[in-house]
Image 1 (cartoon, rainbow, N blue to C red):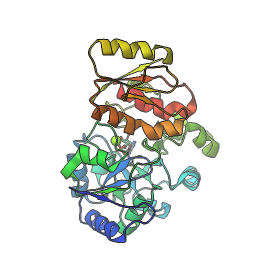
Image 2: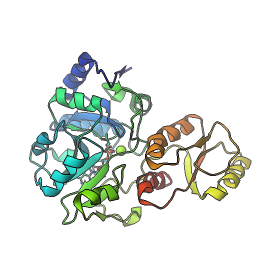
Image 3: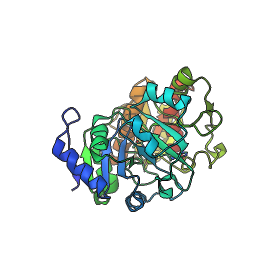
Length: 329
Ligand code: TXA
Ligand code: MG
């Protein structure tokens, strides 16, 4: 079994050095970031990058995010660093923000799915930072799950999804943010949000003024600007339905009467309790942190359907609503 436990506060240098050696040798290492676990490979080695696509069963048109240890290393993979990038990096890095910039020639086409831009971020998780510093290479890392499945927020999730397709899994427990990074395209005339995350549009606007948003409607998103965002994504095995709070109880009873094994994610809705009725936190960051773990748990409990109470249509809930709406497709 490729999984080893590692302590975030005191990472064992021998484990970090083994993991860094594997990455430099073209192998795959899954590691925690503050958002979700990533499936890492040397971003400058096309054979290593090909292993990521093979292990995930990921379509070749879906580009990867490149992780670097420090903002000074961005120039290895991206050009076009400007005032906007500088401000965002100063405010949010290390952290759950990904910037799309013109790519350098060093980045293989497979990393960017043939695009001339590259997505890059400096993660904040101490294990990710230790690994990137030790490896001394840019590391391409999509979420460490089979394509279209739920993203992993624990080492066990990675093991369940990818198993022996990974050479090493660094397990440091649950990831604190719990949903994938905010992605902002800086190659557009106006910075454009491609994927909402825990860093909100409001947070971004506070730092750089104007931010455009691709429409939240999946069918309306431009495939060229946001590759990989059109497919079914972040979905558990169970069917997911979104239901307004007052109707959740009735819907749960109705599905049970149909003979289905029913789970639910509720905040305020009144439902008769059972071990598959999960009461979620009422604030967006805590809800996001619990979201994938709860859906994984309901899958493991054998639920056929998960009834999810709809969430407020406000800015702070945008990222969570985005992931839930993808899960229903
Ligand atoms: O939080 C995260 O970002 C996690 C952790 C591991 O860092 N990674 C992650 O990677 O979510 P992934 O592969 O699941 O999502 C990458 C997404 C792509 O689907 C695409 O939407 C966007 O990032 N992306 C990557 N390169 C891009 C590019 N050149 N232009 C536009 N979007 C790009
Ligand atoms: Mg993913």
